[in-house]
Length: 185
Image 1 (tube, rainbow, N blue to C red):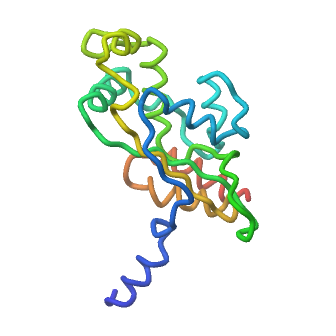
Image 2: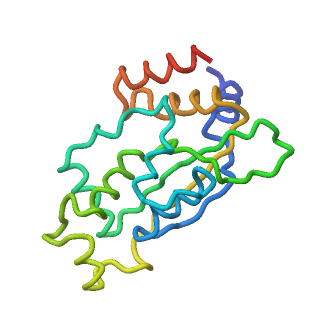
């Protein structure tokens, strides 16, 4: 490829898509924040965050408990991470409401955070609640970036998802599931 072809591919890649919203959300508030952007913000229980998993997304059982534990430990020690949500806004002239979003990237991380918060495992020998009570975790620590993208249709979302994950973190079966969904549209 020549320089112009490379630059055109970069400019036209799904990764050049600007996000509609970006904010830092703290671990303590992450799941409730995600709920505010999904299902019109009506869900009350943090487990309802899993209602925002689109059908092309891989299952949330890819990380072992050890991987979840290590991720949470790293978050507590200061690791910055990003969770991506998306909405489909077929009419770009309309304002993005950002209340009917779905999980685009970060399902394994969300699952780990949910498991920790609900007491499924400890980190540093302490539960989430113990860490809160002892002020190890506070409302102002451990920010996680939450980004929301707007796509004109579901096909573009799935293409982005495949581009982001193919040959990286997802198995061939995971990518095939997404490609099959794309072909069915």
